Length: 368
View 1: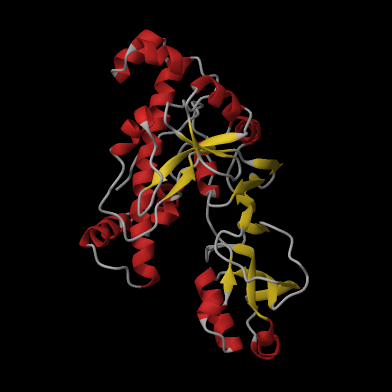
View 2: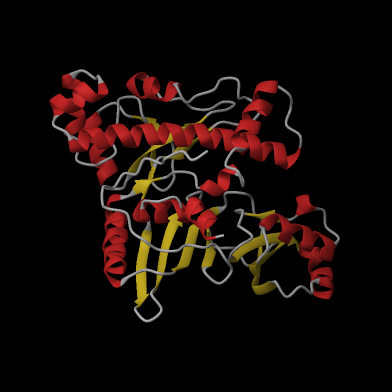
């Protein structure tokens, strides 16, 4: 299955080699708040290589005698990378940790204390540093200007290919489990059902990017014809200066976090969106999910599944802005190092694909 992704930008594709390895992919968590320095929980800033967060938790549980549930973390990090993340453990486990933690692949960089344990989502975002190979100088320059442009104008917040398993089909199992109506057993089933949630969201986002692109690249008459929308509606949508068009009833959230509200006045909301004050959100269908209204609901409905209620529903930012973008190019080795920050839940590979305009997963397969 290779769903061709709908890109928001129209430049010609670039050429580079991407591989997610410990030498080429670095990520560091940025905590949501400053730790108090006192309290019953030991906060560990851990650098790990070639080890998933799940594996890290298993290793820490073994070393400390704690159960895995007593070990707190803010985000999941991939195995094939060098990552820095924060973990919390009850203070009394400190001596066992110091005595028994011996693996080379885990380095404790800093320790502090906090009054509460870490919980999933206690995260502002992540800083990345990624080394891309085989890039010519012209593409490296273009990569830099495009990445900086995206910092200003934003990118669609697709889930990355990592979300959908090795064969990209895990969402099908998730759909089956969701439709069985049974309670979810364990983290594996949860992960599969959430892959199905993410799949529906990605399809919705692709459709919204596509219709925004049609409005951006056509006059209102041809756009109305292509979309089979009333001309009046297309004219109003075309007046919005930003690329991703908002509809009445879209669910907006203050960016990077805050309480949701509905789009009632398109132009006012569009202005706030262009100023990066708010961003539209897409539906992650599930229990108690907040649905869009009126026109936006009509566009969302095809990607909703009311049989999915075993997981909590949510909204996800549809549009995000990368920050702190820097690139360094070495013409001798033809390598480009790109550094950037993304809000929590956003994928570095999605940003790279929007610049490169090709599937990183497919290109890695071809290299093997």
